[in-house]
Image (cartoon, rainbow over all chains, first blue to last red; front, side, top):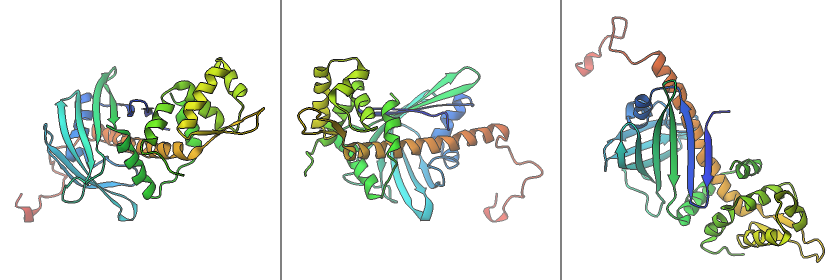
Length: 163
Length: 128
């Protein structure tokens, strides 16, 4: 099991991820904000990041493509809204196409990344995802269903009792 | 059977309360009566009934018709949709951050260095 902590606050439609890394804050911050680093790790297991064009400034964009099993592709476009290096940044993440056009009617997610120094030259990363409206989340869920998502029922108990 | 357009709002509102989440967690183990549901939470049967009504409105549970027992049962479909998506999102982060952890360790053990004598010769085609 990983050391990652997650929490979903369904009332405020927020999803929290927290994890401590054994690395100094400046390095961890760079790992999230420089394409030369992101290509080495961003994306689920078995997925690569063949496209990663990143302009890290307020109003700048990050256009990326995650490639998964059987050449499955998932394009994303992020727009940076706030940057306080090396403490935090805020961006809006959208589904897009290869040309960087935001997919119409697809929901965006507002994601805040925070980097907190911990004793022993460690860094705690806290990611907070906010879904603006319930309808946004609903659409994302429906997309997940279309992709043939199936999960085990056991997870529910675990999920419901995490809080 | 049609779902109201704001069904997720109803689900989220229902899930916002810790007692209602605990009731749902209990019902994942099987049907239960109102009395059985009230016991572990140290609250009155009327209070539980109030929570059950909210859960019922969100389509998360149904209640039997038998006058005496009226057992409550979990209706998994709406919750499963929410949970499936959250699980998928959680896994995205979990697996990404696992990779980041490994990558950061590699970086700190073997930091990227300026070319040294034992690196490959520069590529003549790039003119570098």
